[in-house]
Image 1: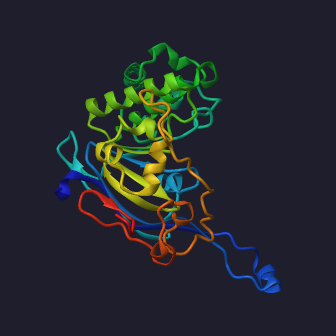
Image 2 (image 1 turned 30 degrees about the horizontal axis):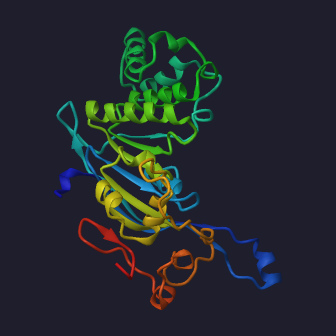
Image 3 (image 1 turned 60 degrees about the vertical axis):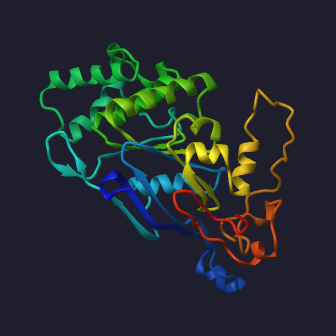
Length: 321
C-alpha cells in the first residue's frame, strides 16, 4: 500500500499509568511501583477512506487507544502520524479529526439547544461567515443525519438515544472532518437503533469519503462495518487482517473464542467451548503469552515466551500459528 493511501500510521504506541500508592506508603510497605499498561506497544495503519475496527473485551485498552489517537491522552511512547491528504481547495493537509463518544446521553451539553451544539465547531473554527449561512448549514447537517432542521431549536433531553447519537455525528461532520474515531458509538443503543446508526455511518463514509477508526467489543456490530479488524487483548493486538478473512478463518485462539460467542440462527445448537477465566490484570500481566491462562491450546513455550505480531497482510501473535 502506498504511503498516500494511509490516513494514520501508528508505531509502537504505549500508554502506561502509574497507579502506585504514595511514596511514603511504598517506603513503609517496601512495595514497588505499580504500572498499569493500558496500551502496551501497538503498531497499525488506517487506510484512507476505509474502516479499521479495534475489537476486544472491556478493559483491553481500546478506549485508551482511541483517546490517544485524538490527542485526549498523551502516549507514553511510540509515534502517531497523519498523512496529508488532498483538500477540496487544492491544498494538502493532515486529515481533520473528530471523535464520536460512546454515551450519547453524556456527550451533549444538556443546557444547549441542538443548533448551538452543532454550530459551535463552525463558529470556533471560523468555517462559515454570516449567521444566515451558519443556520443554513445547521439545517443541512441535521438533514444529512436523518433529523429535521426544525430540531435545531430543541434540547438534547427531548430526543431518544439514537437521535442523540445522530446529533453527535452531525456535530462531528460540522468540522468538515475527514477522520472519525468512533468509541463504541452504538453500545448504549437498542439493537434496531444500532443498525440505523451503522447504516447511516456507512452511507456518510461513501458520500464524503470518511475514514473510520471504529472501537467496539461486539464482533457482530463491526462485521459489516469494517474493512480491516484488529483484535486487542490486554493492551496488544493479537490478530490483524481483512475483516472477511478474520471472520471466515480466525487464526488466534482468542479470536476463535470471541467468534464462538456470536449467536448463529442456522446452527443454534452447535458445539461451542465457553470462554473461561477473567482477563488478567494489566498491572501484573502473566509471563509469556498474556492469553495462555485462558487458552485451551497453550503449551510450555506460551507460558515463558511472549509471541510477536507477525505476518504479511494477515498478522497473528501466536506461537501455534
